Length: 344
Image (cartoon, rainbow, N blue to C red; front, side, top):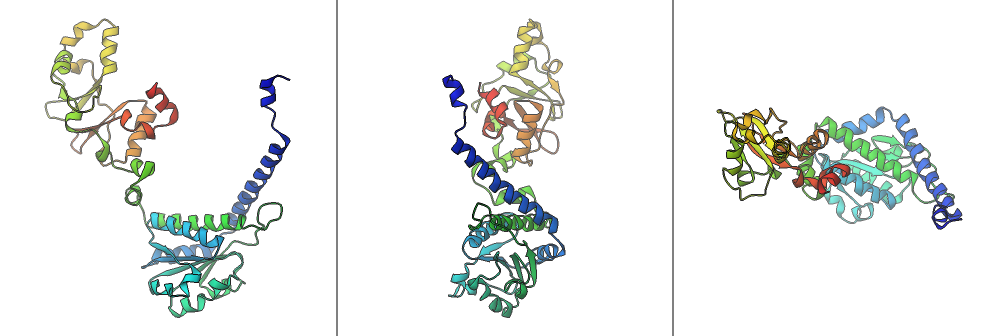
């Protein structure tokens, strides 16, 4: 057997590991599919309570359920529903002071018998705070003492022994995501609002408005469509980042056309040098694709990608050019195949 062929042979131990891994994923995926099919009016009642909450959604869980609760808290907060996480052990040592009658309490426990959590419910009820439980059965101690139960049903944990919280925590997380996103949609939470809570990283950059990233002032080349090509290119030097695109305007100042370095090169290749002393309006791209300065940067990236263009003029509500998005400014957000073409 050649060395190349030998490297393609998967060791038996790896085959078994892959089989086990796929079994875990399929087990958890199957559980989610089953829970999705069993959702009923109680889910809607829970969503109503979250939607109508005038204070905070206080998420509470112990152990692995608590870790899932922290993630649900973050998801709620980032999608327009104020939320905090309350550790049940800390709650009985003073942290219950964070609760307010306008809050909604979201309790997480697969068994519904978690002592630290069940001991809290009578206190929460005394404060007249509505309680939602995500648990396996409404007949459990937790399920029978709350206002609304979103039932997970009897779930078998993944793995050979079925002991570690896996399928149950995945189910809790998914139900929490469903509640957060359903409520967010009811609130008509917009991408612009979402962006305010995600100013950092690639996601935050993608959610910026075009006006925050576009080239302006000396970074632009704006000329009259009546000028000749030669006049346009020798008119003046630009101190900003170089762009190979010229935005052309009519007598009213509105964008009328677009001309790029590629257009110039094409004229030279076709031996049309005489055109250089003709009005640029004769060869410009009329009515080019544009975008608004208030659009999201992700929308600009989508246009650059789908239309296979390298520059995108930005015009205001009156149609006048105010900026430019160059593909090199957003190369990190482009689909991999197009960013590779640009860097080649």
